[in-house]
Image (cartoon, rainbow, N blue to C red; front, side, top):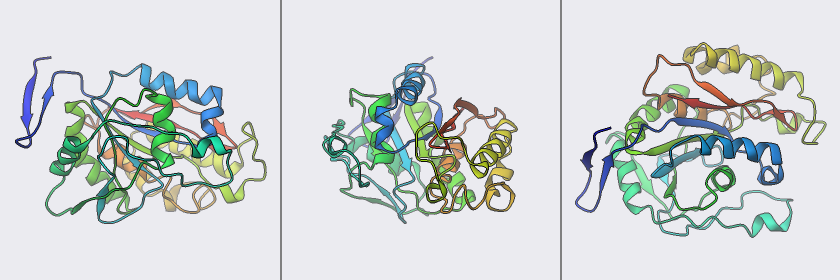
Length: 274
């Protein structure tokens, strides 16, 4: 591929000299994902199959904030341990990524003036660092987390569309959530628990809509999806999907499922968007 230069400020340039990165929606799991051999091997397999990104922009279910806000771009940004009741080792983990100041400016430049973008000193929450610690354990890639400013699918699709050009510059865009997330309705918390009907039916419905590339149906999940509201009593683990779908650069190609199956009866379906 012939390279070209995109100048976005006087301080940095990004060259297009690699393949367009995909966009991902991944099930991020709780910290105990890090002890699950199958799941970690699946996530590692995803990253191993991709060209190494120059930077990563991730939208997690665990940061809902308007207006759009970016995490701290400083090197070795601390982690947010936004969970409780887990083994002490999870509160001592680190993920010391490189400086992302230039990348932060790049991301902000992609969004229109109608969308205010704030900079913060917030670290990376577990929806970001847990899967990235598996996928890119060397922590040698600049990472930014972006808040999810709304749960409205149309608005999130639009934001994803603005972010799509980042993919041509070597940026991996990730929506991080969970395809079903009815934790309060689980009766069996073992990792290999059989999926409740509300979880398996929602997952099958989503898989069918994704295979058909039916974004309208997915956007109307509250009214159309079986298993609601049990599959998503709150919707923040599903809605990062729309950032990913919006970031598609070839809307004629249906998303591809990379991981399926269940963890504690919850769907860990993860997809790739071309």
